[in-house]
Length: 296
Image (cartoon, rainbow, N blue to C red; front, top):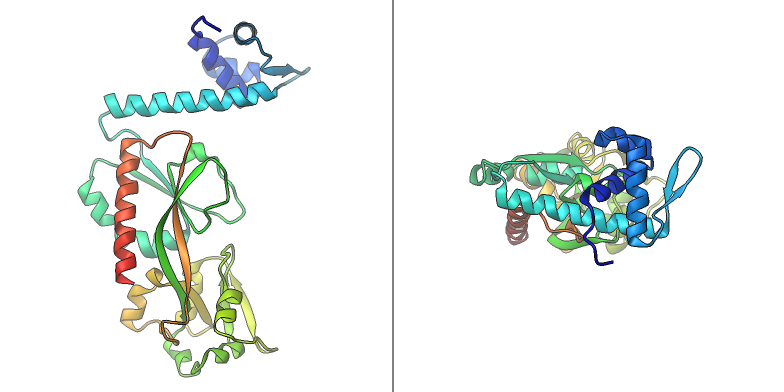
């Protein structure tokens, strides 16, 4: 293929492939259904390959269409990012972060003022990772997660190694002289976390017994609140409990060697570069992560 592609055809293809409908693509682009259909015929003719299978009331992508859609999306994203970097005011579009809720509440929140002060022109959009729910990466710039191998097409950098250890309220501390004493307590487990009590109990050589109970909790915030009230013992990242440990609201009943390491990963799409604002936020996160490792 020597002739340059018609960008209107490419726009029609992206909308049709995303919506799997020539009619809906036409409505989105302000064209007629016949016009979009003609664009697709001419694009396929120029490429020498069928991109769609035409069905009675819908269309679906061929293998070539699926592959071409990935190329088109990447190219359009690069164009958008390049335009924003070169011609944007620097404040266009919020940096979109998706992160573990506990990370946002206990690690990010106490530190975020520093970033906002240094970069007042950058807006942030912060959303939680919900266990069992996958979200399109087109909607986010950066993710902070425990899991670095959930998806292909992503770059994962270690943000920090964070020790994981049991914590409890002052009411329970006197009853926990050795790790084996945990066998008679309520163990608070946060759903969706791969690292949990089984790993820590194995490390501590604790054998659960008939009195051991595990309470499934929906969030780290709830687990730590229950621990403060003496309901049970929570397993927490060290960076999540810095303040309550200093204030005496939570107690770490066992010494430092009895801990596992929870790794937080900073994850970004590998298919296209980050916007300038997102790069600045990423670099700030990595710097703060290094400080956390030094402090813990």
